[in-house]
Length: 411
Image (tube, rainbow, N blue to C red):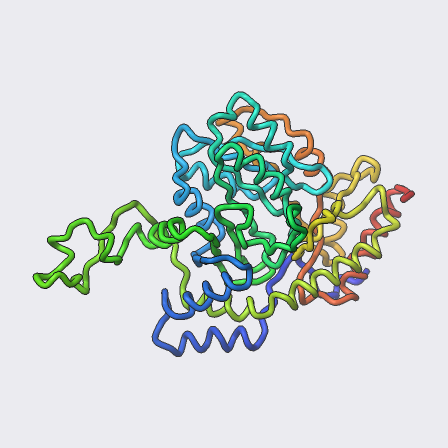
């Protein structure tokens, strides 16, 4: 295959002229930091996912940290987190001083299940778990209703890590309705990431959604240094108000230790423009996924896509295949190098977090068979809206050549 063809990364932003115009309008305006574009993006995001509130922030990692702080995770407590996720999901609990209990996952989807949480809750550290953070990997939703049923029975708080799942919906088993991820029907907070490889991009950026007014107020404060400008909440009244009882116009109070996790108008103008195209992006990604599925079907069982949840309409972020590298007779690194030589870049999502040196030093070696089985086979292939059908054909042809060259046989 010719190496003169354009290189295909595993993910890439789709920036159009209207996105450039939206950012340019902010640059020519009066606000660069937190201004009207932030408020407009938050309102549009809340409406899009069906949540009462949305809070924009500087990254998905910042959003996870804010969620942990708003739910008051603290030393002596634990958060249940699937090991198969980017490290930021677990790190957020550690930032707040809590510990992490790593959950296993379905080896064929990479998703946390209700029984994975159940095993943690009945284990020796189960009583210390106060929060659970299911991860919607690749765009498919975790067993959120099942996890929520267990969590609510124990009084646990729930944070959905939906960094991969803007545009995803799932079926509510109680009434059959399709529920948008981010609506927080089965959680307290949902977290999104808008990194360039995600379905919509802000450059760097994230957001949280919630239906709880108290959580919303706390998230807003923690995002901005722990400050409040609400006169009804001022504690130092002798400094806050003038002789007539009116709030002094310059006055604010820091009532908690917060952070500078704000998003700018520049980022949110891009996010708002991208959000308007979310449905189109989701449809384009779905069409590419369907073409991959069709072209790679004859490589099973040596190579097959993720198992699909029937109760989920994914907003696909990643296209992951599971490869039996032992049957193929090649290591994953060798396959990735062969694809790279064809101008096709791939990635692995993710190295299980429980294997990371930091967490091994904290908790020792853990046995999570589903997670390990998934990780040992996973490879993410290029998927982004700018891909053409010919690009998918090119990737599929390269994989057929890899499998044929190995002597492996599809069934």
